[in-house]
Length: 424
Image 1 (tube, rainbow, N blue to C red):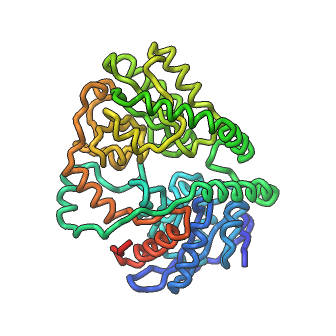
Image 2 (cartoon, one colour):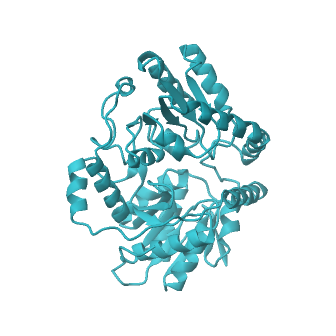
Image 3 (cartoon, rainbow, N blue to C red):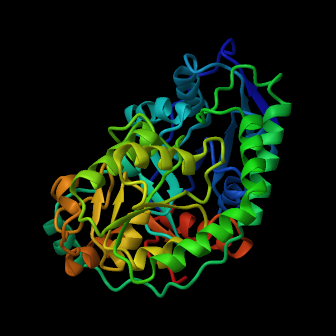
């Protein structure tokens, strides 16, 4: 049964229950990833004997919930903190679960939960990819409580047992794309009902749809160009700059940049002024970029103005792993692709806030100095960092296949219930 909450509704004042280890809990789920994650998590929690409620802010949320205890929130952002607090008291909530702590409603909800002493569990794409999912208490990325002290990681990791075996996790881009289409379609068709819904993404779903169509139309040409570029880079020296999504909260809230174009200009201008003359810069498009902006053209224009149009390449498609292994170094705003480079022993310069930006692991100097023989990451420090991440805020699994979702749900519930390690 779905309940509808509007700002005019007054609710009671039951005190939220304090959760004790081993006791059954009451979970309130806010927004999840577009797809089945939170429905599957809700089913798993219910099977484990817990009580689960889910707030739906738009038709896409509701489409993928389809379980009891769904709550339609129809109010605006201004009323949301008070309504969220009432929900916590009325439902006896002990735990709040959300995906991404920088969405508008989540930014407003987290301080309320902290004030009330409610545990916040935050899902996000894995700090280390692929095959891992981030599940961290309190906040993720720039809001994470993880320190930036390499000695702390070395000392903490030394007291931990070896991690459980971990293998490849199946994932389907086709499934991800289809679930996004279903979610956005349900969102658009129900805007009449959710009149106050404000999306954290800057574009209307229809605009994004047009962008994806344009991207699909040039897919064949992009693949041919990318294969040719990879061939030309063989034996060449180059740095890699993987782009992030222009709508990503990592850019908006955890970096000094107004957007990706701002970062591109800074990186290319620094490369032009300070990189050796025989060095190239490869700009890699994000695989989930919606195509609304033509980043190839933006990159080409900035490079031409900087006088390095003949030394800056744009890679529209292809896996990032092989192009990373051949790089002299990687520049990133705060993308988790940085951990991929670090695992390969590739130097990384971080321009924003990132959990992996730890002295000795990433390059600690300024960007202009990075282009000339940057030191490799400290292997022992990175291994310790990796071990602590697995212990504190990573679980095996993924979001876009049945086996991956089964694994995420099983491990997430184990973490919620205090069972710290499971085999994959």
